[in-house]
View 1 (cartoon, helix red, strand yellow):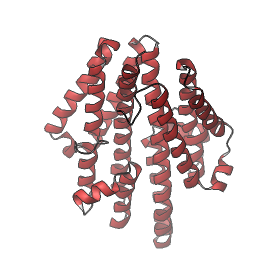
View 2 (cartoon, helix red, strand yellow; view 1 turned 120 degrees about the vertical axis):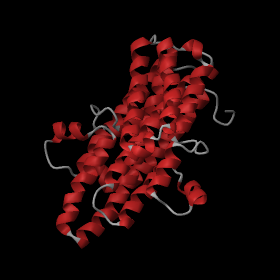
View 3 (spheres, rainbow, N blue to C red; view 1 turned 180 degrees about the vertical axis):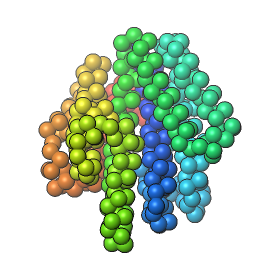
Length: 323
């Protein structure tokens, strides 16, 4: 497969997954903002949302003061923000259009219709009227795109590069959600418990439940642990459980398998990096991760997944500098 074609397919899938993950993060922040809490705690949650996407400075320069509506608007509608939902869906559509001949009709129509419909929904005011409904729609369209790919595409290199983009993006976003939310929760829990121990414990449940729901993990958690929600178990589920679809190790299972399938004469080092990262996750224990420090562990993971993405671009796609 030509590297340019593989590049478009990879980024089409990656932008679709990024739009879904942004919708998930916005949804959990919107839901938690409705809980009883101080204005300072609520504001910290929205700053954390921007930190996840490394957009704090850009937002601060553009808006100055922070408000929930401005963050949602910036992360959904702002076309100058390359990570906004609309920017991602447009980029996914443009990448799909560039390789229309490599896609089935169903895949192209799904991606194209998503871009057309999101413009209509924004124009109709659905985002302002019911943000939760809009975020659910974005997630549904991403699920639909993956399902159509899996159900209609030939399992060839085109399919594999789409899946590679999906799981690399998913691993990156799950790590970012965990890192920022755990840091934010530490400060929030301390403040709430000091002010009102009973209310703080009550809000803990809703906070962690919201994080689990942001990765479709609430029911999974209940099935696996059958116990009260604790930060350590949440981290274990989203980092080390191979049967949890959005966990780090599950995503890396897929990345390693795909790299083995599409390997070429240049990709040995990239495969080695992916295999080592996968092995470190596969044989890790949550107690050891917390002993090192969750923030330090996830920061290292994000650096390594970034290096892996660069290696994939270098070995298979259009190098990022050239793109």
